[in-house]
Amino acid sequence: MQEVRQSAMGPRLGLKKLLLASDHDRAVLQGSNVAHLVDYLEADGSSFDMLKDTFPIASIAFSDKGEADLKKALVRLSALRTIPDIAVLRLDPANVAESSALLRALAEDGVGRLARYAASITSELAMLRREREELFENYRVLEDAFHARNWEPVAEAFAHDPFADPKDEGVGQLLASAYIEQLLPVSSLGVAGFALHLHSLPRGSGEMIVTLGFLESGEGVAEWNVPFGGLVSGWNFFSLPRACGGAARTLRLRVSASGSDALGLSLGHHIASERYSARSEHPHPDLDLRPLAFRVFTGLPGVKPASTANMIAPTSLLEGQFTVDYRLGLEKLSQIADASVTQIVPDFQTIRFLEHEHAIVCHPLPTGISAGAISRAIEPGTVSLSASAIIDHPNGAPAAVSFLLSPAGSNARAEVAELARKGTVKPSTLFSGWREVGAQQSVSISMQMDEAIRVPMDLIILSRAVGETVDFCWLKLSSFRLVKQSTESLDVR
Image (tube, rainbow, N blue to C red; front, side, top):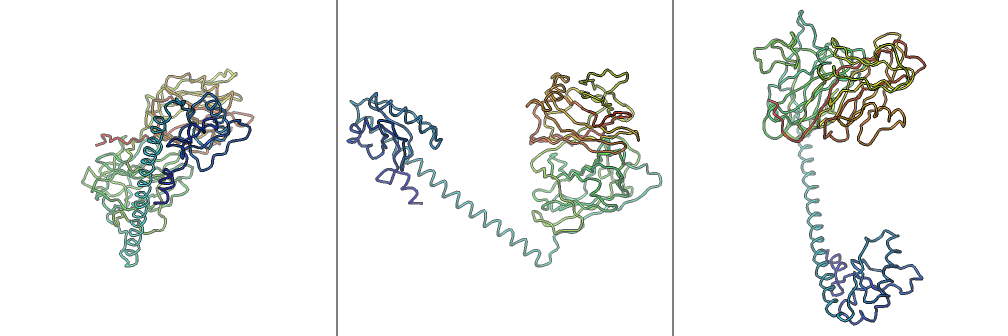
């Protein structure tokens, strides 16, 4: 470190040259007390300037010719982009002693002090890095010691077995339009994972969305987005990267699904506690004092749980974030307005709302884009949007569907026309990309934002033909699920 410090300070401390001047002013500077800090550039400017052992912080001139030489040389140096732009200081040759004293104070005292400060910070950072590496190494050794002594890091702490009531209607359809919420009857301290029971698997495409968070603060822990193909009949195990630590809090589980087919989520036996019964934003007879069928596994707080067969890792961690799921209700969906851009004038309605199915129907036309806009549908803080799309008719022609998010109050038809004409959207607009949908084949279309949306936005649903015909191409979109996140606590109790 002493060698580094000496290479960054004056000749008495090994300081590099920090000032530039022209050969025209060499005679003026040679007798000054900053002569050892100055590098001189050739006066004629015929050759390219080379700086050796020099990092200039300023250039100085005592004459018109010297100033002109410096300006020409600095233009050539700036083209190399190797040093930042520096100013030309014009000084009075009659006060060389006073000017050189100020320059030396600036170069040696100011820059030297900064160099010593930077060196001390670098040294402290190196020490902190070594201590951090040692801490992580000790932590790894501690984990290995637990495993070596066969101290089982994961154990079942609670279980509700599945129970099939003959009167059950099934909550599969409810999951497509709302979420089911379950409080875990164990402390969050040490919880390393949980399991959910499925009595049947859907045949179509879609995904199961599971989130785990804290009830008291609304802070999220993790989220799992599992395609139907990744689920099994029976118990499905969801793991955390490390068992929960910190203060003991109440964990809240939320389950929903996207797709046209019902997900066979199992319920448990009837219980007396209303607090630990499953609940939903929509009433359902099966959720009358019945919990979900689930298991909870605990381990050592902060320690990675032992690997277990069929464990599903989280899609994303929500540490420090407060997550809220919301859906587009009837009042929003019913406000959809036609924003299509096409030269064809059909004799039927291409965009409409199906109230009894909570769905939007789009019928693409042979040319152009069929579109419907919902004003201010996207709330600030939204980070993802998903929906289920299907063409119900068995002979329906294939189509492509997409989402477009535009600033609230913008001209939706103009935004669609921009996409139709150029194939791209404005920087202020977000586009999901096209997703093809076939007859009687449900697909999940989703849109993930790089960062949370800061202002309300309009949602535009787009569809277009992908073949030569659009016969029976009634494209239905439903189960609009949105997720917004914040770093500020939300009142969720």
